[in-house]
Amino acid sequence: QVQLVESGGGLVQAGGSLRLSCTASGDIFNINTMIMGWYRQAPGKQRDLVAAITSGGSTNYAGSVKGRFTIFKTNAKNTVYLQMNSLKPEDTAVYYCRGTVVGAADYWGQGTQVTVSS
Image (tube, rainbow, N blue to C red; front, side):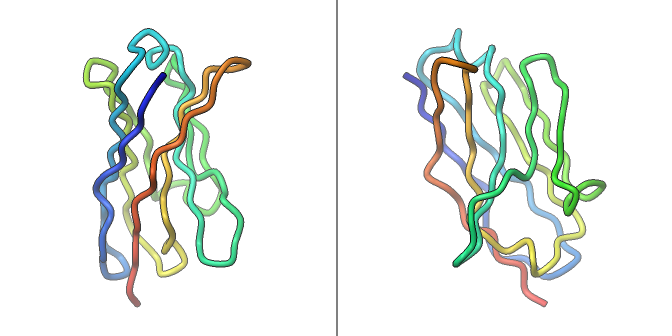
């Protein structure tokens, strides 16, 4: 089992920055072999992928955040981060961390609220 805990959300003005963190605990072997991702869900909308990073460090971003957000991780700290710059009001959502062991297991954090004021 793996537990994911997000932190770093909050209220920020448009154009500002936030860094989200997701720290994993539990089965350490599985954490280092996971695909880690950040998703977000705005009120009344579906949960969508924001960014993902593989165990090897390859990254993927939604088009709406490319060039503004950066996903990176520190395996030694079992933590994945989402650096969010040039934030826009449309980035307002609950952000969730996800860890996937392909074909085996799927874990989600509890979510952290990000609110961007105009």
